[in-house]
Length: 215
Image 1 (cartoon, rainbow, N blue to C red):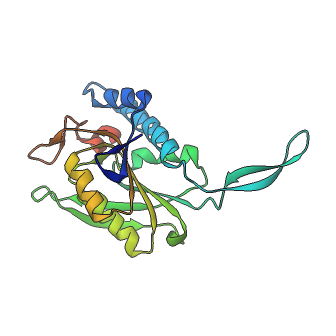
Image 2: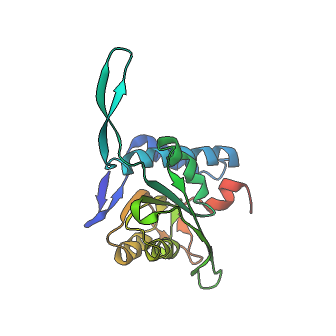
C-alpha cells in the first residue's frame, strides 16, 4: 500500500493481484456471477491488509506434542458495516478472514437530482463503541454516503473506524478525509473523475446493479 498524496489516513493498494481483479471488474462483459465473485475476492485481499493492526493476545493451546502460548486476535470485537446495497457484496470477503465479526447495515439512497444521500436504515452491533468498525462500499464517488454512514456510526458511539472501497474518485477521497480525518481509508484504485451524473470514470458502472443483476 502507498499513501495517497499527503494524506496520512488514506492508503491505496498496489498489489498486482488486486489491480488485475479490478481490471476484470471494469469489463462490461463481466457477468453478474463473475462480478460478484471478484468483489468478494477483492474485499478479502483488501481486508487482509487493512486489518493488519488488529490487536493480539497470547492464549494457551495444546498441540499434538505440547501445550504452548500462541497469538490470537484479542477480543474479536470486529464489526463489518456495509453501506446498502452494494456494500453487501464485500461482506463475505471480510467475514472469510474474521468469521466471528458482527455485521450491521446502513441503508442510504441517492437523490437522483441532487446526488445527496438519504438514510432509510441503520442497525449496528452492540456495544459498537467497543468494536473495530470496518465500513465497506465498492465505490467512493462524491463521498456523501461514506461521510453520512460514518456520521451515523459516530453518533451511536463508534470510535475506531476503517473505510474500505474498491474504486474511488479523487473528490470523494478528499471530502471523506476532510469530514473524518480520524478514519483510516483504504482504496483499491483511484480513478480519474466523476461524470455529470456523479458516476466514477472510468469506473465499473453501477456496482449494485452489477452485483445483484439489476438495472
